[in-house]
Image 1 (cartoon, helix red, strand yellow):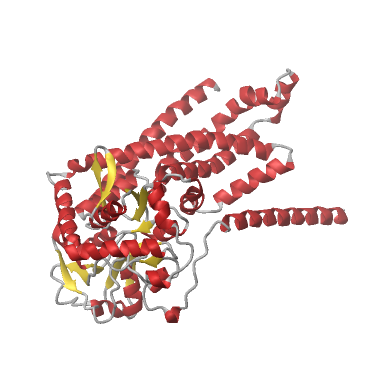
Image 2 (spheres, rainbow, N blue to C red):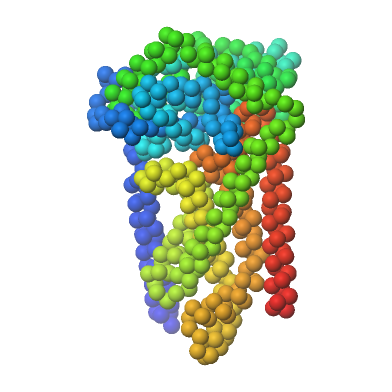
Amino acid sequence: MKKMFSQVKKKNQVGWQLKGFNLMVILAILISLVVPAKSVSASSWTGPETAAEVEGEDTLLTEIQERGVLRMGTASGYSPYEFTVLQEGKNVVVGIDVFLGQHIADQLGVELEVVDMEFGSLIASLETGGIDMIIAGMGATEERDQSIDFSNAYELSGQSIVIREGEEDEIVDYTSFENGEHTISVSEATLQEGYVRDHFENPDLLIMRKSADAIAALISGQADGVLLDDAVAGANAAENEGLVVIDSKLDGLVEDQGKSIGIPENQPSFQSAINGILEDVNEQGLIETWTEASFDIIAGENAGTGWTIYWPYFWNGIKTTLIIAAVSIFFGMILGIFLALMRLTNNPFLKFIATAYIEFVRGTPLMIQVLFMFLGVGSIFGWSTMTAGLVSVSMNSGAYIAEIIRGGIQSVDKGQAEAARSLGLGYWQTMRKVIFPQSLRSIWPSLGNEFITLIKESSIVSTIGVAELTFQTRAVTSITYQAVVPLFISMIIYFIMTYALSQVLNVYERKMNQKYA
């Protein structure tokens, strides 16, 4: 008996080892799609490379001209440089950087395609070929230069700190935020975050996703100051009563490389072409012209009274959110049914595939899956942000629905299946006419909860620029320079959608209970 137990234990250990090995193989295949970054000695960096210093396959400029489209990556929500407005019911990214991108495209004789995503995803998208250049108020840093190349600077700007009015005597410059005396807030993955980490001594640092979120933290008292570019700081203070701007006095400590255009490494022809265009831009003073035009757009969007003028943004987000949820539920159900049946089959290969898929999907964050699907798989097949988002959420939902369905099928008494088979019903007929109807009643609450969760989880696709409700909320924030009210409105809308769906699900649950009572 002891020997038999030992053999069974050993067999189970080997099985799990094989399963772990196969999962590692799957991970290795996925990781192999990541493009390695170039290596640069940290001590040798003296600034972004020029066109004369790079060499390699120089084909990007030709590819862009043959394609007829220049793909510009940016991260909206940083007005006046890049922010979204609704034009004819569609989200359009506008701002200083978009004016610049359009000018470059015009000079190259091609169309401009603006790809909006999270700031932290821009470099990865450029490396994988999803975009051709980055114009997002990005500065050249040593860390970024290890992965991509940069153009010459198209704008130089100082650093200012936004604080609450009346605290000018207490907070005078960056030194007021050292040793945790006050809390300084910045946007994640920005130059400002690097400045605080490198030049503030023992700071109490609050990192937010967007500059508008940092300003909201300042207004609510969660932060005491926000470090921003001069233009952005001034715009936020002007639009928020009770905020003022002070000089950070960082000019003597940081060498401002300015805002530059990020391009793939080893593309000297493309780099030279952009640098030539930027030289003309600076000579003509176009940045100043585009700055005025951007503020005029913001003023036009804010014309009117009350928050109802921003309803088109929220309505557009609601429609996109419901589309994502509906499509993900449909394909998630189909995938979930197949995965559940694969797990219940006697075929060990199919069972392993289903188990490995479910465990892998449930064991990784949805946000990582969305980013990988867009930056990795999506760049290979040329998927749009919407397609990548739908595929990611559907595949993620399928894994959870599969386990719900599997549990429901196993909860049905085995005698039901045996009775159906004895009456001459085949496997699929038994499942469709006997097992599924009975299991649906028991899994309906869990299934309904998954459907409701999908509405909320759809917000994650906003990280790759899908204009659902959360994305539109940030769009309103970027043009109003206020975060709390748009967030509150968004919360109410999400609650209405999920509550309405829960009531519909309850109606069907009561009907099923009456039918099988």
